Structures are given as structure tokens and as C-alpha cells.
Image (cartoon, rainbow, N blue to C red):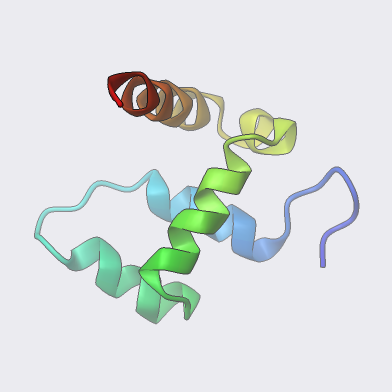
Length: 78
């Protein structure tokens, strides 16, 4: 468990995995299972929670801002 105000190892791994580029369909989902040992559903729950945390923004500002923007665009389209 991370200290308050810090990301734990799994959260850092989620950000790192999300920042990678994927060449084939299914490669990301396979990496989620193999590298993180969690389901894709849980991965996206953790990732979505990270987008609301300032610690994640400080860790990966370009990635988090891009994902926040995409999330808002999807919400606005509903």
C-alpha cells in the first residue's frame, strides 16, 4: 500500500502500461492479464480512478491529460 499522496506499484504499472503503444488487437488485454494479474475490467476501473488523482497527473501529465480529455469527450457525446 502506498503512502497517502503517493501512487503504489500497481498504479504506476497501470500508467506505464497505458502509455505504451499496441501493434496487435488483444495485445493490451493480454499484457494486462500477464503483467498485472488483473482483469481488463479491473484495469479500467483503476485507470479511471487514477485520472482523478493529482498524483497521477504529476507522474504522467501528458498521458493523464490526454485520457481526461478523451473521457470528457465521451461523456459529452452521450
